[in-house]
Length: 68
Image (cartoon, rainbow, N blue to C red; front, side, top):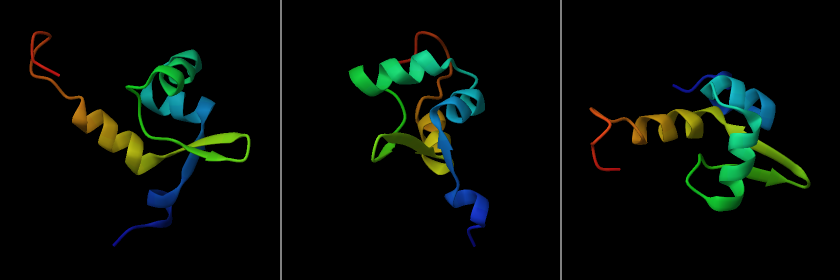
């Protein structure tokens, strides 16, 4: 069963901290693509923790030469 924390949304700063990335990296990826899924709530950008976890899992590699 999902807990309330599974549905928790993070703002850009909190999402960057959660992933160990810079805010500017997430800002750039929102424009160019390739980053985690996000939602726009008016002018506000939020990330769902499950989407961040799924994005990390999808980008796991066994070596630096592994295909994306």
